[in-house]
Image 1 (cartoon, rainbow, N blue to C red):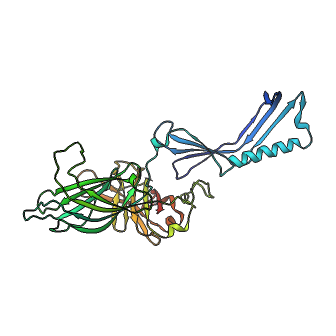
Image 2 (image 1 turned 135 degrees about the vertical axis):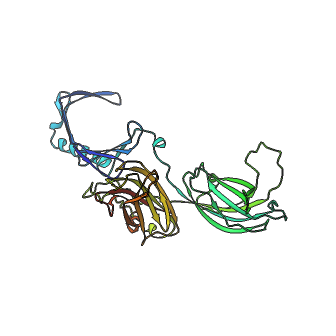
Length: 416
C-alpha cells in the first residue's frame, strides 16, 4: 500500500488488491416468459484503486467523503456455465467479454474519474466560502431628522452584512445637511445570498459623546438577481420591531443601489498527484484561465500552521499577514513549536495582484511583562503571480531566518 503525504486536508492511499476464490454463484435471468440459469464460477479480481478520505474533519469518523478511482484497468476473470457447458470456451467470446468489462469500468472509474461516497453531511463540516461580491452605492438621503440644536444634523451611513465578522463600513460625514448626497461605493463579501441581510444605519455625528442614530433599514440579498443593478428607496425606521406602533415619526429615506456579482466557477481543481508529490513545493492548482488575469476579485489567505518554529526566549507563536500595508494576525498559541491556526484572511481587490508579494511572519509574544516581549521566529514573502495564474496554491515554505521552521499557507484568487 502506498500512502501519500499532501498539503491538502485528506488521506490518500493506493492499495493493490488481489482476490481469487472459487465461488459457485447461480444467476437467474428472466427474459419474457423464459427463466434462464447461469452459473458463475472461479471469480478473480485484480485492481489498483486510489482511495481518498477527504476532507479531514474533527467530527467522527474524521473524514466527510470517500473518493475512489482506479489507477489502471482492472482484471476480472471468471467462468460462466449454461446448461452444463462453459460459455467462455466459445472462440473469441472470452476476450470480447474481458475487454468489454475493462472498457466499461475504465470509462466510469479510471483516474481522473472518481466514485464518491458521502459519509458526513457536507453542511455540518464545510466552512462557508465566499460566493460573490456585493457592490453597494450609497446614493443619498432625504428629509432626515433634525438632531442638532440649530436644527440640522451631520449624517453618515454604516453598512454591514449579517454573519460578517469584519467591522462595518462607513460613508463620509456630511456636515449640517438633512438631504445629504454621498454617491459612495463599497464592496462586501457574500457567503450566502439566500439568507444574508444587508444592514443600513444612519447616524448623526457628534463631537462629544455617542452618535445618535437617525434611522435604520434592512435589505435581504435574496431580493437581488445576479449581475442586475437594483435601486432601493428605503423608509428609515427606529428599529426592526414591526409590532411596535408607538413610534410613527417620519425619519426620512435612504436611496441605495445594489448589485450582486457571483464569482466565476473555477476553471479546474487540484486533484492529482504530480511528480514529486509530497515535496515541500507541491500543491499548485493547474486550473488557470484568462479571466483571472483581469478584473476584480477576492484574495483569500489561509494560514494553516507551522512546524519547528523555535524562539530563543519563548515560543508563543502567531502569524502576521501583511499585504498592501494592511496587517492581519492569527490567534496566539502558547508554548508550542508546531502551531495549527487554520485562519483565513480576505482582501478585496479591484485588479489581480500580478506583480505583488504578500509577507507572512511568524512571531512570538511573551504573555507576561518582559523586556523581550516580541520575537521573530521567521518570515516568508510569497509572489502572487502564480496564485493569479493558477487560481490557487497550497504549499509549505521554509521560513527565512529560521533554522528548520516551515509554514503551511493556502492562497486563492477568485474572480467575478
